[in-house]
Amino acid sequence: MRVLVTGGSGFIGSHVIDKLGEAGHVARNFDIVESPHHAPGSVDTYLGDLADVAALTDALRDCDAVIHLAAVADVGQVVLDPVFNDTVNVRGTLNVLEAARAVGGVRVLYGSTIWVYHGLTGETVDETTPLTLPAHIYTASKLAGEMYCSSYAELFDVPYTILRFGIPYGPRARPAAVVPAFVRKALAGEPLTVAGAGEQCRRFVYVEDLADGIVAALDPAAVNDIFNLVGDVDTSILEIASVVREIVGDVDIVHTEARAGDFSGAEASGAKALAVLGWAPRTPFAEGVRRYIAWLKDAAGEARAPQLD
Image (cartoon, rainbow, N blue to C red; front, side):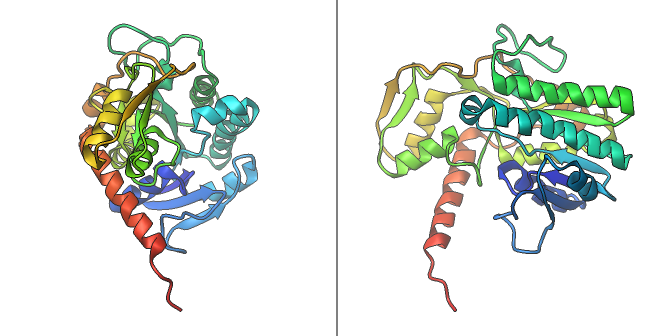
């Protein structure tokens, strides 16, 4: 299959491009910049903006599917600029669907999030759990994308697959994410700050495992369906800090005031992805952190290496 990846220059998208190649597919990248994670010219790339339906339509020509990952993923940035968040996460998704409709015969795999379960409490939630009106702007924007996918399938026969990601971590992650931030502080010998008691839990998923799951969802069995791609255990913020301290070295863990608008929700089940797609995460959290640290040190070493003429 030939598969377009929006946001293929980014954290998750660059790994998906790698996994598509390993699976025998042909990947095409659509992003506003070239991928810094691949050799120049090694990936078929269309430079463009999600606001440009014509550019998206052109990039989708001769593709069988589009994996739509381009988004504002930093929840803090979403709160600072909700209008930009809407432009990218909501309007951008609508534009991808519109381009798929124009080309015809293209399935849209939409990168959503377990933030759609934000605020739900009680037992484990899964893809059939009724969702409440979102209390967070980020959740609202990602749910809007899910609803557009469903609507385009119903009205225009554009097939979709909705993938609700756990919290990704690993090589190439943006520095502001919690694992990179803790690792960076620990390597500098700085204390690790934890909001409140640090009991807030996440279903983390190692990024290469997540990319495998996204590629697995190209299977026809996933058409017009929803899947949670999540880790198999919940990890608290305090546990993250403890794992980083154990791997990097003895640094202090300091508790600060609890943060408003932080993720809260019930445990998200990944059983359906295992049953239908044969996918389950393979990398334990601590091992994933070790791999991230090794990648970070290698990247730092390459940056310091002298350039030869």
